[in-house]
Amino acid sequence: MIISIALAARDEADLASGHKRKKAGDLITIKPYPWQWGTNEIKEYLIININLGQKITDYAIAAKLEVPHFIDGRRWWSEAGNEKVVAKRRYKILFADLENLAQSKGIAIDWGRVADLNDPYQPLDGTIFMVTELLTIAWDKVLIRKFKDIDWAEIKAG
Amino acid sequence: MASSRKTGTNEQIKTYGNATRQYTALATWEAATDTDLVTAAQSQVLECYDDAASFNDYVTLNGAITNASYFRIIRPASGQGHDGTPNNGVYFQCTTDANIFLVYDDYNQIQDIIARLNINSINNRATFITNRASQAINAAFIGCIAWDSTNAGTGVADGFTMDTDVSTIYAVNCIAINCDYSGFREGGSGTAYFYNCTSVNNNNGFRAATTTNNAKNCVASGNTSNDWVGTWTQTTCTAEDASPTYVNSAGNDFHLASADTVCINQGTDLSADAVYAFDDDIDKTSRSGAWDIGADELRRIMLISQFNSFVLPIVLLFAYNFIKRDFNFIRKAIRYLKRI
Image (cartoon, rainbow over the protein chains, first blue to last red):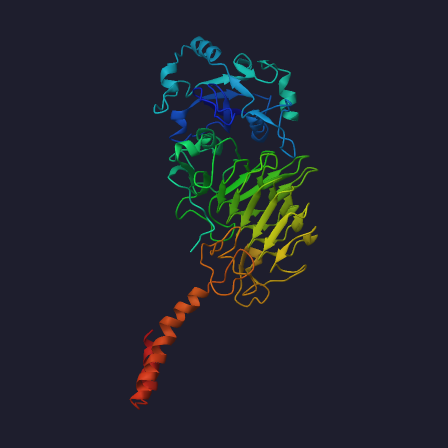
């Protein structure tokens, strides 16, 4: 299946309470492709599209990529949901690697415009990356490494 | 008049629905508004439009700094809300193994939303839920409807799970219909308040895991296991196996029928309640006189207006003509009735 992902466009300052707000590249939410995003969403988030192929074929499972960064590293919400959340998103896209990937397809990204929350700039609109390409740009904050092919089984089981 | 639906101070309203709205995903609005609302002196509101038959979406409200004046609200836009039934209005149907509306933050309110969870999971999930660990002080679900929530796996799907360890949380004027486990479930050592809620045709109606709960004016009926499970502190709630008369149960319309004798005029006036004072119902109709039990207040105001429109003129006509000894007034009255 193909998914459309909203990524945080820039770093937001953490709160005095200790709450960690979204950082550039954080994977905020996933929708099935094609998705018509809202008028604020196309300004506030960078949208990328990924063809997951047969790795994940169910949107309800793909939504597990939205999992928070739990302190115990679990892949999905427990029943009680009382585990401490370190940050609201576990996975992020590394913008430096995304830039390289885009350039390989002849797309130049203006990061100043991406970070401008009043600019509906979506340089990757219409581009669909393959799941193998996702492995080169996706970062797991718990495992402190990029995605590997072996991760899909755990994500699905999570 | 004190509406059960709180409004925030200095509301910053954003819209949700299709691509013509500002947001199409609850998570994107949530991530844009998990800020220090107290310092910013703002409340953040997401007004939802009935742009789709249903929205497959869910959200966790977590991280914003809030207080009693500045907090977050999710509610339908004006004219987009339900009619007291799950048959129309802003409707979320989620198939992801998650709670649909999970509230961590204090004072947040979810108002007048219809939601349905349809999952296959080993986990117990809820359609509307507060997070026990975060406490969710004074968080509330108001006028919401949990409907047909099911879990095809070994876990269950609840309507409303009011879970807190130290705080107070509220479900007011809410309805749970045909959920595969509890309509309303209470847990944690904090106090969960259930005011004027209706729980029908679930596995169990109101299920308490602890004794720190308070149900006032609540009705449970037709629940296949028990209407009331556990130890409840009740004020004018219906008894086990009560049989209220609803307008159209088969059509999921659980407004009270005028012939009902179980709920109508049997409740307690909560307009000056010390914990959560309000005087409206799920339809935003004002409650007055003797309150009804459950989410719906029979619309007596219509009867009063009918009295004013039809009967009062006749009474005045009668009095006037009686004084004048003009007994032709009977003919006049008949003519008047024919005219209206």
